[in-house]
Image 1 (tube, helix red, strand yellow):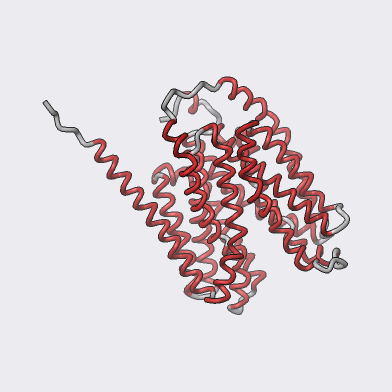
Image 2 (tube, rainbow, N blue to C red):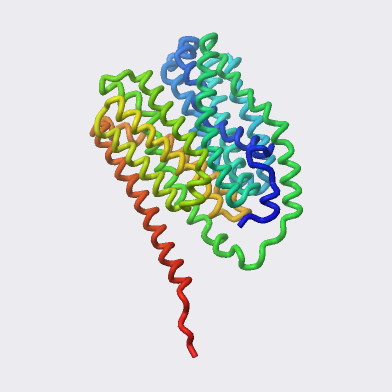
Amino acid sequence: MPTNAQTSLPPLWLQKSTIALLLVATLKIMANATISPALPGLEDIFSDNAQAAYLTRFLVAAPSLTVVLIAPIAGVVADRFGRAPILVAGVVLFALSGSAGAYLPDLTSVLVSRLILGVAVALTMTAQIALVGDLFEGNRRSAFMGLQTAAINFSGFLYIGFAGFLAGYSPRWPFLIYALPFLLLPLLLPLLHRERLDAANRELPVEGLNATTEGNWFLRASALSVLTMATVMLFFLMPSQLPFFLTENGLDGASGTAYGLGALTLTGGCVAVVFKRISGVMGLCATFSIGFALMGTGFATLSLDASWPTVLGGAVQIGAGYALVQPALFLVALNVAPQSKRGRVSGMVTTAMFLGQVISPLLLTPLLQGFGFGLVFLLSSIALFAFAFTALCILVFQAIALRISLRPQPDRQ
């Protein structure tokens, strides 16, 4: 039941801190995908570099590589020095390093700036997740996670569309989009003051109250990180392999990918908006089960046939399922993390997400080449259904344990 303090708060979407943290969350998708429309033009500009064809394509993935290395360190730093300072520093570094590609003289320096951008992403994502845990509780935290997933999905359309428009004038201009986070600073700076006040007013924990959580947090966070990495690895089959799947089956890879990913992101955004209601009624275990089952059904649909109905239908199901799973993963991460360790757990989950993106093409491309899309999609579906079944079993065991605990004990006299 919400407290009087919670019910007196303004609607979540009207709070400045909510708006600021939602906008910061969208930087994750801005970091990688924004320059995609400019890649052919960049290859032409830097054609004097013998490795231009390879390096220009690596510009998209370069930030993810640095995130994997830096996010765990960023989590420790955020716990030590505070989340808000790390968040502000990350946003400033993001804007500086991201926009540097608009004026740097050669491809090597642009690549270095993209690697530094990954450092900024690690700082911002780790601190942002931890701050959500500090600022929101209960239903408001669930509502925020749903809004965050929706914001990430819808912002992808805006960033990539705007980048495509700018790339029509110059391949350098899309880099200027990375300077937009400077506009977030007026919204983020009040978080510094608020965090200092919260730290000063925070009561010491009751002896023994968090002993179990303090003792088990690393094991639970590690298990959650493995699940996150596996989920993202399978989900990333869509943006990384869908063009090749369509082309191999005689469909238009370019427009088909746009339609498929468009259906995925739009569906995901709409489902994420109602995540709070779904998770509030069903609970997190059931939400996980439904989400993984939807993703599994989507990949099973793709394995049947390469036609427009199956491609769009599969994309819609995968997008809807991932929109339930992703915010649920973040919620569990915050639930298993003691307040003093939220930065570390956020860093672990952030690392797992980006590591899943990195290893997805490395691990699954050889399987696709050796066994074909149909079998790999089917195996992915089976794995996701296994995740769904596991979540369902946990839900059943929890219900049985609750029923046993509520059973009247015999009077022993």
